[in-house]
Length: 133
Image 1 (tube, rainbow, N blue to C red):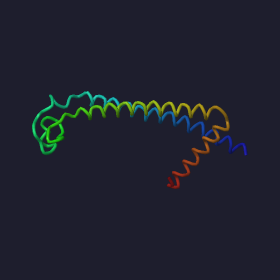
Image 2: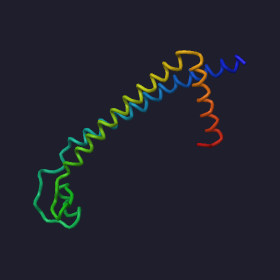
Image 3: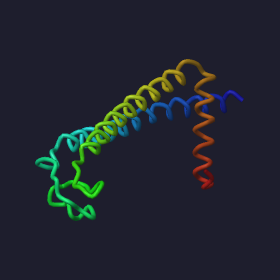
Image 4: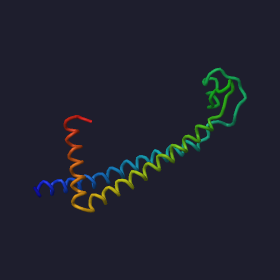
């Protein structure tokens, strides 16, 4: 019976260590996306607000503005959303890393925790093999 427990412990420790590697990979992708969205938020889209009448967004495309209330309007609100998305991506990246580091410490804390982590990893692998989500 202890051989099964040792195996589950080893699987739990290995899966948590692999989880840390993947969390750093995903966090770095999120940081790159956050930098990209922040840069896009600071790129000017128009030289100023125009007072031209419009019937659709294509009428304002020269000024890179949108048609609202039959007037060409600047895209300043979209810039705020880009900054918000950038901040959200950075927070998610930090959260992913913090969670995976906490989980790794929890699994390596005791044999029982590692066995629980190993059993969860085995159940996840079996579920993937059987194509059940």
